[in-house]
Amino acid sequence: MHRETTIPEADQTAGAAATGPHACGGAGGNCAADASPDRGGIWLRGNARPGIAIAIASVSIALLVALAVVLLFRTESAGPPLASTAEGRWLSPVVAGVLVAAGLVVAATAIGLTALPRLVLEGGRVRVRLAPLRSETVPIEFVECFFLGSRLEPPRRGDARSGGNRVRTLVMRIAERAHDHAGRPTLPAWGEWREGSVTFDGRWCEPLSVDLARRLNRDLAAAKRSAGEPGARRIPGGRA
Image 1 (cartoon, rainbow, N blue to C red):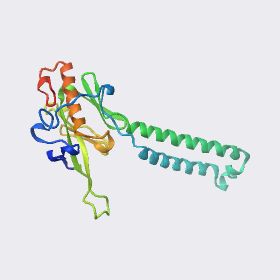
Image 2: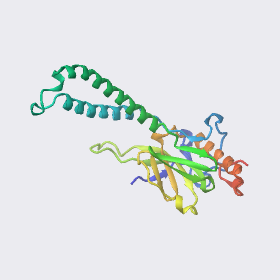
Image 3: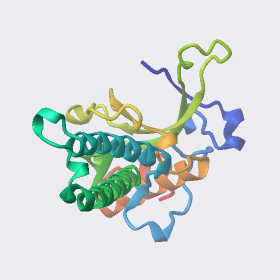
Image 4: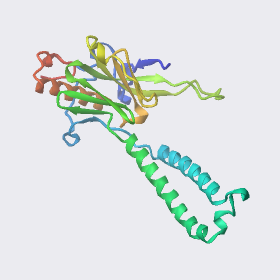
């Protein structure tokens, strides 16, 4: 289990946010800034990871190659090796081409999944994606604020020189009254969703910064005003 902490105010110059009264906005370091007009309804973008995609594609191609070798070089009990026959001589390049194409498809799919937006405003709801093939929506009225934090990752096995790496995170707070939205299953590498806190791992989304937290709180306040929520003017981070 990872221990989630917030970054002290002294670190705000490095892109972190403070806790306390200003953790979600107001007059402090997390108060909202102007939203980017070119984002549309996307609040938080994903982070395409080509390295991960290449690794997945490589493993997939290796498995497919092993399968192809078994098919082309069958045992003697099953007949002569296919690769030594006329059929095998033209089939081999076809199989190679199919394997390369399959690897490219796997890589493109993996990159596409990791690049999917993590937060999208859809009408009066916020769509949260913390798993490649699964997303959940939360009514905008239940979203309270955004703030930056961090957590300490345990050191790698056998690494006695390191006490672990600190990873920057973004936290979306959900109102306590929203019991049905307190937790959801996630891909742990992308983040966590439990006890009313949705935590996004900074390694799998766009770079996290104070300006990003400010913009999210500003967008949240604007979305609540647009939805006509009575308490929208009191949203932390809003400047209504």
